Length: 256
Image (cartoon, rainbow, N blue to C red):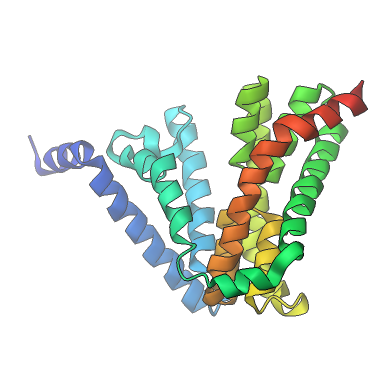
């Protein structure tokens, strides 16, 4: 057995270790590009996610699978690293550093932003799905829920029995939303007063998409990240509650 085959076998048996190496290299490249070519205006994590989506697409085309690069044996650990357990740990960790005094200041506006954000995102997603020919309330709700948040779509789709196509479209629209938020936030921050914990919490509550909010705020002011991430996380929870219940019933009422 030659050296390449031995190396491949070792990495395949230790795929999680390999995933940390791959992600580490990707992050180094992304932050270098952010620093050298965008003067840190586009955050490294936004670039990393964009590269990851591109790699996942071509990996899926190459393997014919549905888990992106994780379908390649040597990179299968990425499926574990990006799984729900580590994802939840990552989301919880973003709340470290939050000051309760700042949370109290946002008051009713923070709560209202959550409901406004969920209703507006759902409505936009449902209208776009309708324009593209979807008429079944379950399909409309599934796609609209994915637009609300790419983590919400699959949950709602499974709860209501939405088709895999509707779930996929919803997730894709949610990912697009996250990428747009992370790329645009640094450029609009000064125009919307996004320079303090209170506005960061309202911002996260309206837009949700924890990954997009975190990356966008990190490129704006890293001190705002915990506040925006916290309300964005609540947004996901509220979306999971409202989309398959109140908003689904509203969709049924409108379509019948």
